[in-house]
Length: 247
Ligand SMILES: NC(=O)c1ccc[n+]([C@@H]2O[C@H](COP(=O)([O-])OP(=O)(O)OC[C@H]3O[C@@H](n4cnc5c(N)ncnc54)[C@H](OP(=O)(O)O)[C@@H]3O)[C@@H](O)[C@H]2O)c1
Image (cartoon, rainbow, N blue to C red; front, top):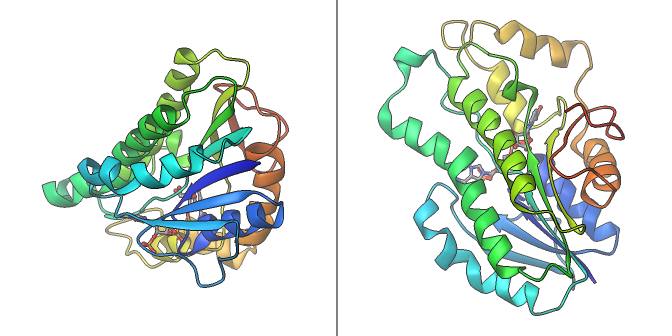
């Protein structure tokens, strides 16, 4: 059997990825504060975890990861999808508590999840894969989105370090920039003031120009090409051409 762990399955891309994977016959472990209502069935499990509590991740998730490994899958994948775009604001507007929380969810938690995943699925005979859901923001400096940009840049470096540490032929770590998708995260960006997000007009144009993909369309292609496809270890893939690595 094949199993995939997806974080952030309450809504948006993560919920659609979990649904698409279930439709492909994969066993899915959803991780997050809640699970989307439509997710269920024999092959679906859910483990509750607030990813802002990085120190609590091992205790919260080790049993669920271990029980999945106990099913002796031939393919195991972790999709670090959960993220927050908040707080939005120029650097002087940020406070320590929200800085720590944002970086915890977007960067520290994915690292802790990779660590737990690699300990739970330590057998190199198992085909192992880590998909870090990044963003064009890893490269583009967006005024007002310093924490999000910084975390996504860090996440892409994490992918490259994982590839440098793991050379088994069955191991792949990849970064995925999924393009612009019609989710709550886009709505959060569109709803900002120009004081917090000087380039807010770009996010409003994404919607007005019909550029947003549906989560379902994005998920189907991401599952087919990246999660269950044949990506290269350490590479970065960007929507819409998921067949060719950009880096
Ligand atoms: N939408 C886009 O246009 C776009 C563009 C580029 C990259 N991305 C990336 O795609 C991924 C999915 O984004 P999305 O648009 O689907 O975002 P979304 O609609 O805002 O959903 C975010 C998901 O992350 C979860 N999450 C946030 N904070 C959490 C926490 N503390 N603990 C556990 N789970 C938490 C949310 O769960 P709760 O319901 O519990 O908050 C939700 O399930 C993200 O990595 C994002 O950076 C999105």
